[in-house]
Image (cartoon, rainbow, N blue to C red; front, side, top):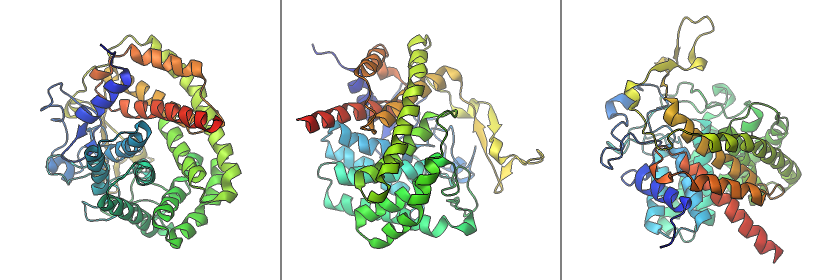
Length: 411
């Protein structure tokens, strides 16, 4: 009998456990092995309407559905998946995140499976980044999406660009705002950190590529050269986290692969080499940590309502007199390390692998790929309870896809 690889187990886990066919979205974690109870922790419609426990839905299990959807749509392409029904569900789920709430182009973090439409009002730079990148990849790289889905996907990308054009302005301090039109945290799209500076021009550039409409190209050019210059000021020795690194690389990769701004190509490649170097440097100790881990890779998450909660530091007034931001509380449930840590390690390995894979000038050593594979074959991926296995599989699939492409070029 053929051995079932960790990759097959991961794909099955993502599509059968973390994916909800009713919403077309991948949720962040499960709290029960019973398929009927796995999402029983997700916020109620009433809790969401009250922005409880926070306006981002952080730690509730539906904070990163749009981000996950972006990874998933590109993963379909990388794996050569041919299940068009599943692809249609996943793409439609992400599209609904951009219109179901009535503010077209605002990318909600996720939708409640209780009613298929309730969502938290504070999105983020990360959700907008992955959602648009994944949809671009899907429309331009996935085989044969039907005409209706292509139309809806293009409309989604156009609407996100239009929303940003209307909202990300000097008057709003270049903030995406919340659904209630008050300032949002983690949502500044310009005058931000160097690794975030290509996100906004990427969104406009993607709209230009998929629609062919020149106005989006003009908007992109207004920001892209300055954004790249800012990106190149990044400090490779800083205390990097895997999520910002992969998103920086994705935003850069759009420009490299699309060729929409050829005058920036040299700087884009330089920045991508820097990102790949950062990723490889941080992957090595993370691998060592994962190899030495003796905990439970399949520990079930707790219902977030029973966890202690901490106020988000960015929302606390300088004098400590208030922890409200825009009139709302940003209390964040604090996960226990027993399940949060293994999930974070798997996610980090995947994000660093993808960052390296996207840089053709910085190939991943075969010895490193073999080492990653040996580690993952020792883990029972079919028991993992966090969606960190999605970027994990994405990163590994990116490495394999890149190897195939390079081999084809040599021939």
